[in-house]
Amino acid sequence: MRSGKSGRKDRAAALAGPVGSLRVMSDLSYFQAATIGLLQGVTELFPVSSLGHSILVPAWVGGSWGHLVTEQSTKASESSPYLAFIVATHVATALALIVFYLRAWVRIVKGLWTSAVRRSIETPTERLAWLIVVATIPVGILGLALEHPLRVLFAKPLAAAAFLTVNGIILLGGEQLIRRRRAADPAVRAAVRARTADAGSALVEREQDVLVAKVGWRDAVAVGVAQSFALLAGISRSGITMVAGLVRGLDHESAANFAFLLATPVILAAGVLKLPDLAKPDAAGIRGPTIVGAVLAGLAAYVAVRFLTRYFENRSLRPFGVYCLVAGVISVVHFA
Image (cartoon, helix red, strand yellow):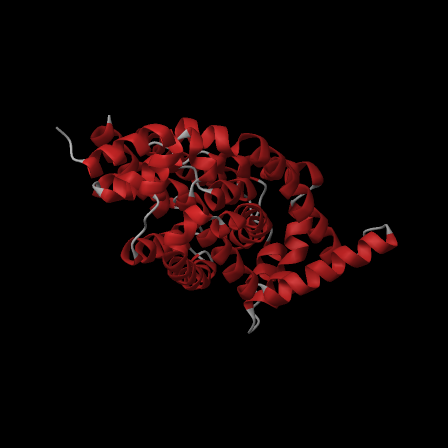
């Protein structure tokens, strides 16, 4: 015969159903929060899929970590405190990008405001600002409509492993394609290689002409749609956006900067919509770990973007493609 305490727990679980089980799973240790925060800060910007890693790493570890994966892939996950924690780390990543590109964003926002008031686009900065707006619209619409259904359907280890493999193929295939197609313009390369002390202002000052020359309005829409594939766990937002930019003729550095700029409003907007869930009673147990995880995610993201903007000055996506392909195939075999 079961004890009274055990019986009460069983009755509570039966009454609560899936949501009740999520409350039990939503307890998050400081160590887990710190680990996932650091992982998020790095993998959100590295072209290897942060969402895919937030599913695969806990699934590989197992135990209490595996419950975190379960929270992301249930129908009740929209109200899950753990999902709010993940979103908080995304917001910290977006804030790190804003800090890194602060001067660029100041000029872009000013250009957007001036252009809207004047009702015309007259400068490269203004055109770059509107390109970002246009590219953000498709992923915003598709994200609102499909993010939760896709997470319930595909946020599982085997699916994430399969899409991570696909991500590797996209990165390697994109590199191979542009290697064959690209005939670099010497004048454009000279402009891109010009260096200034500040990376944020340099982006607008030295690369806006490159972006404006190579990226048209239809291209911006196509890049925005490409970003939407990052709703699938395992597909990297920065990776697929970079490949889209490379195919249009951007070099790796310009494509990376453009990808990081485009990612910022999308990540930030998602956080603004989801962060209030941390104020709910169910999230009381993870607020402290969430702060720790978010701070570490922001610091890791800042270091990552500094590294990647230098890395892509003269390197390619191939190492990341190989990693995704190998890690994805091994994970498919493991979780199949």
